[in-house]
Length: 473
Image (cartoon, rainbow, N blue to C red; front, top):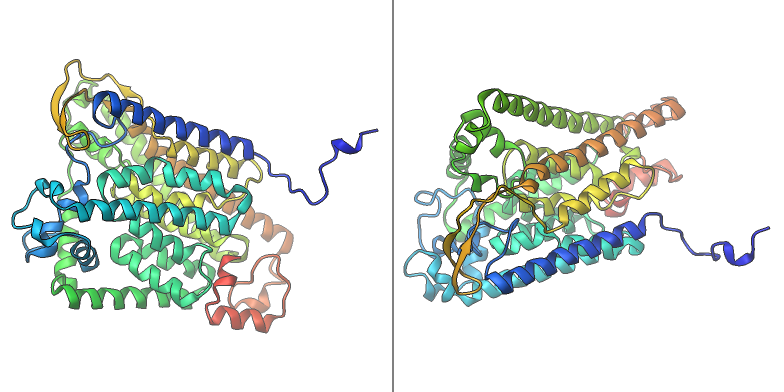
């Protein structure tokens, strides 16, 4: 007979795997401490952070000049909508931009403070989102996103993806109840990163037609307003710039493989024989690597599409955050937007429950992607002297291709493959147990929230109004 003390206390919820999540918090913290120690000793950030010590905050300061001078779309041929340039104009010192160049970083302290503020706001948004979603697991998952590799790398690059991630969390996370506010932030997110239009289309799989319509209308209104204020960036020019940027993508040196979000850079290198280090492997090895990687990418894309089809068949079985993850993952997998864009995808993976074995596997892989540690394969024997912006001195850098650069895109694709398999399995099980008899009367109605027994009319009314509480379920 067991003693009373061996039984779980009444009302205490058992959370399986929570110790594993806190173990990854320790690993992420150890990676940050290792990076800080390396910086204090050598004066620059080691891999996987950017390979150029003098390139800190480049994404911001390389474009801020065009926020104060004409030519952002016809001279610079930027692919960013006008909203980004308005933000840069607002949070920068115009007196520092008589000329173009990274030297303005020593003058425009307003821009540096703004970037640090964006990071702090993004971290707060991460903690608040997970606190609203699941208080018991909020800290480890929010810590991984706030202090893990994707977001800290975004700060080092000075990229708008930080502000964009806040808008994505507000648009598709549990923080907001108002449907119209969700649509508004989704419209802002699309104007930061155009490829997020796929996330706005994701609610269609759950029969949320009004949600998609509201988000797209908000995106058009935000674009039109910012275009009018900035005075440049009409749709025709912006479209041609995006097309030209996509067509001209190429890879010329190993640094392009530093922290990718997809296998597109590696496939470009293998297919074009542009890197000498790859030519040393031999043509047969290169061809086999190219064929297997290309096949893996195609299988992953097909898995996401299959998961989306399964979601459309039984939307009440699939949680809404997973549908958003499918849309973002498919976009990032099919193009190269930089590894820091994982902060748009990984929060929705962290909204999965620790149930079964597939979901925990996806969660563990997500934690792995947040660890800021890299293993460099065959570093060059001699170092290169570079100027470090953060330490304000010359440093010696030893370059080499990182193992994580080769594995991270594959792990990201594997995570979505697992979630797609879970979705197909859950939908199939629901079809086997429920059949179609109970669904026939809903064939022209909105999706029914799973596990909620309510009269039909209130559910349909809430869905027509775009009630965010129904979306969260």
